[in-house]
Length: 387
Image (tube, rainbow, N blue to C red):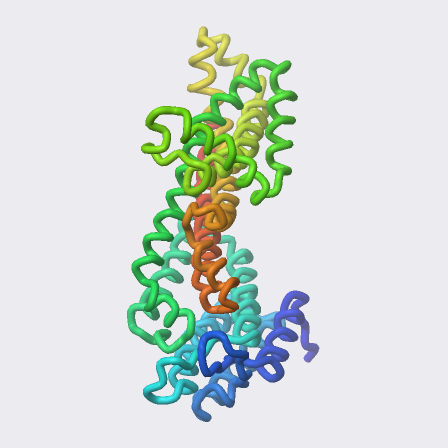
């Protein structure tokens, strides 16, 4: 019998072997800012659980390495991820001395590499299973519910990032609300302004190159530089325009962050609107003209519905981009999860950095999956309607 190896599985198995047996699983620190002491899996967990986790990881690595059935690979990845999620919480309680409120236990590089390896295996399996858009959203919902259950159960309360959250719970949700408001608000403004501008650029060819070139130039300006460039003009507006300051417009704060994110959002929305409208089959337009449709009717009843999946792709790009860029808004007082990131950098507290970074990554990841599903469903509907 000849063993057949999976190419991606070879990489996954190598990562699992290194992370499980050579890299540290958790880091113990006497307080939040001192250097940490690395702990392997067998040192970070009670002996029985440590051996059990190593066995699960070993079996998962072998399943990934060999060309095994998809359902077996799915089961191996899910079991490994669940075991890692549960046992890192156990490690936090095991390593923390009783009654010690200053000690910090954090996942180390081995844990993150194992999470990456088995998430990669799970993503590969799900892509091969060719799940429907709704099924992919369902998987995301199940994962979110599982993480929520672990958070509510208190299984992770001994971990350093949750200790940072416990002391900042109110501000965490307040900054999270600002972060989401900045990302979604600037996206909504860009759609309201960008879609009509894209339609105009599609109809007036002489205008197209100039508008897209200007938006391209804006897109190349580094985010911090653009935030800085907006301080002076918005400060002038706040000082000289009656009611502007009362409305929240000032040189620093939410206003320049919102304007910068809006400007960054315009290019994908406008460009995808132009591309989507340009991709409408000429035969569809000719048929609409033959039916006596006006230009307005053709735009809203024929061209825009056919171009919508492409426009939605631009909106997806903007949303994921804005969720990430909103982190930088904290540098000019705009709030958001970046507040924790930059506080953590200033205090050399990595757990505080993660408190801002992890929800930002999670939001971007969830937004990408949901909008990808919506795009695929609208594209399928478009193909079905055209047939």
